[in-house]
Length: 122
Length: 122
DNA sequence: TATAGATATATCGAAACTTGATATATACCA
DNA sequence: TGGTATATATCAAGTTTCGATATATCTATA
Image 1: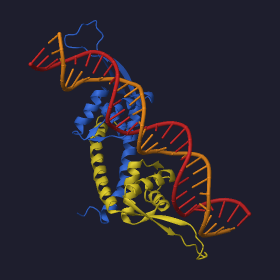
Image 2 (image 1 turned 135 degrees about the vertical axis):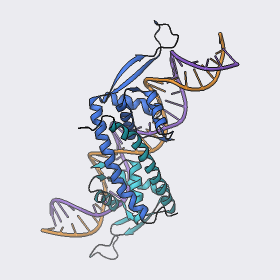
Image 3 (image 1 turned 180 degrees about the horizontal axis):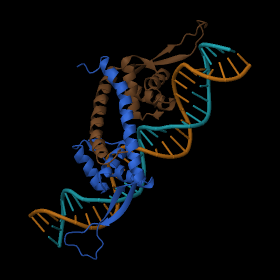
Image 4 (image 1 turned 180 degrees about the vertical axis):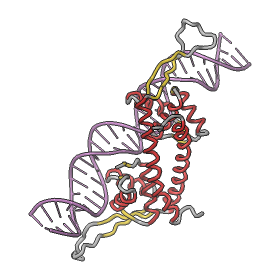
């Protein structure tokens, strides 16, 4: 299980929210599921990140009450904090993707020649 | 000019040393040149990293005196600290490359669907 | 000879990031 | 009643980041 660094976490979280609104717990489950258990974004990584993204105006929060099956309509049950990707966040995501691609191709320039000069021959 | 994070720095530095021994300053110039000025590894990123790699036994240091053009043979001039990739470092590099590829392809799984669902259309 | 710029290694410190642990509370199932 | 899953959030100790700084040598030029 690979823990994601914040740069990658941000890219992944914004990518998930680009599909549709979601909330912390669901996002973390989504990441684990879609990476087939290889990626992990723990609560202590997730919530500070969401707070930061919210502060930067990249995502927009809204609280929604979770209705229990046979719950008293007047009782105040569990609340869920939904996040929506903002226009700014969408723009930021596009830039992050481009940046990510750029870093990838530049890194390939270092990694490939090395493996051609004697590495990974066994 | 993109500053490299330590994970990427380590991958790049080990890749450079996989070609042949080098030293801090030359490695940083090499990285800037081979990335056409896009990547940067500053002294404050380079030397702590080299120290860490040395402590972990991934690279092996050796001091060599730099002879000046018309220098007094007896004088002790500038010294240069060369680093050689160790067997352990070579093994580590192979693993890091594989890990890097794995992260790349997993990230692509998040990034690509997003750009298909409405992003980057303008 | 002076001096400026390039070469070369290295540390400091404030801010940011990382991560396991902890806290709190509700919902579902047997 | 107890155990597991859901759900958000903070803490604290450690690590990482990065511009600034320190030190010293080499080279070119006026």
